[in-house]
Image 1: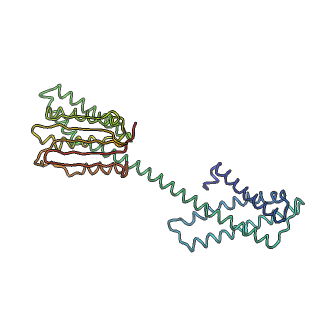
Image 2 (image 1 turned 180 degrees about the vertical axis):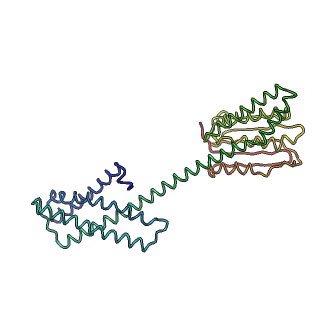
Image 3 (image 1 turned 120 degrees about the vertical axis):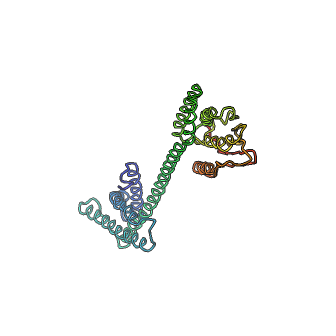
Length: 350
């Protein structure tokens, strides 16, 4: 349906605009001496209101030529033809309304050939302006629809991303945990029970947090704690962790489940291969309206057979790009004995 005629506020504004046009025409008639001011108003206002609805057909004329496939010559021919045809309708309305008023002795305006030509030109010009305005209105609607479509695409992409994350939590982690629980049931039932509770707590938290767009760093740290609690039962004293998070960084916002995969990588590609284990250090601080997060873990000088291909880090980098554009960054560095990841995000506080 027509976007103006289907909206009461827009319709009122549209009619007011045409009434202003009618007042301009009445002023022209009064200044040229063709009619008094009151007669000119009585003549022009009803005609422009009716013609306003005729001019609204410009919307459908513009829609008949989609902008994406529009060519210059057909567009000019169509717009000029429609303007001339509508100018004829406008002139017919004006002369017909004047003849009716003359026959009823309301008023009599004698139009000269020049004034008839001016009326016809005014009708053509008003319709052409209506075409251009409706063209602009359609262009704005297209932009708005494109933005809505892009927003929906981002939401769908986020939902797909979260589904992928839930699917990735991590079959290997789940299988290893279940195997550990199975082994512990015969040698340490207390540890098996503790690991079962910790595993359930981790999945409960991960599913709850993944439904949110952003979460406070403190909640992400709590999720990492739950994950480490499970892994520490598996690895024992071999796995240690140190978290150093500033107070302001605790309430900084970030996408959910951003750090947990990095903690998992630190265990899988670092701590697990070391006979003495090591410490995973996570630091969070705020500097100059930026949130800085670093994760560091020791690693073996000799890469194991399970060395990663960096796909997880690349996925996180792409995820940050989708959320923050070029404002966020992730960098990683490997030495012979350590691996570190640094993430920088624009500061957003909860």
